[in-house]
Length: 351
Image 1 (tube, rainbow, N blue to C red):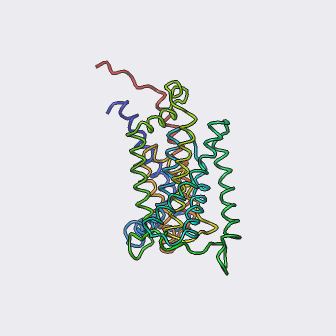
Image 2: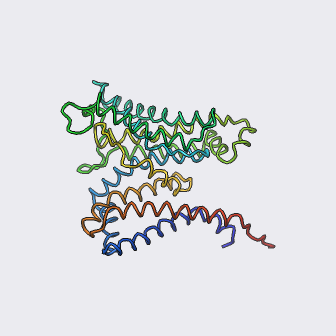
Image 3: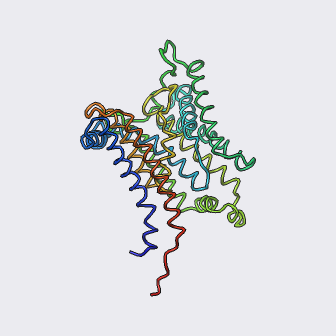
């Protein structure tokens, strides 16, 4: 294998090394906790991937991770860092909940798409705001998306504690949404709902958009070099606003799927950090839609099997969060090393 071929394989090998390294360091943490790492990992992945209910729970957690990660990915393709997935999830959940609560007497085949569309629009608007500020005003999107997270979280918190709070509710949450707005369960007897199918469909559409359409070429061109893209006649401002709105819309669908497929009402804590995990997943996937699917499954399996690992092997759930953090750390290290390796050009083959 030539040096050039080895460099081309780096984007595939680096994430695998990062995951393996995080699991190895995680095994050391498990040993320090006084448990058997083999037994712990066996319990974690066996429960989350090989049992019926456990796999259903993994798919349930994978749905919001996949949709939000796709949103981060499409923004990255245009050179934008969408750190606002968490807030966009909350806004998407709010939009779908409003349709589920206040639009009545619709058949499910109309009510469900309408509620999903509302979630997409609410999340899309929340993503478009920092896109507009970046494209037109030059405001850094990392700062605006991060700050908008807190606004969205507190907005939903206010609404479920006041106007949207269910009567006699012991904690802040809304009434149940209409049955016609609830996503169907795809694995009977489990929590797995049609949100995972929505995520896979969105992944397929996004792949076609990015790889097989003129718009995908424009997005990629802006991400590589916005100055060259502008000279090529591409509207950089419009592209940035579009991808940020699309990113927010995909995260909004994640919030909608949580309300419509799992909780059936709007809670104060809609997301358990899915928006922040999505950032790690998007970077770990290295710009690949298929990679996002696999990495989302890995992160969902970690979340799904964490409690079982604690019960059966006596390992604290925090070890799983440490493994997730270590994965991010190692992928960051691999990116830095890869950049240095690419600077060193391979020797020219005289043959």
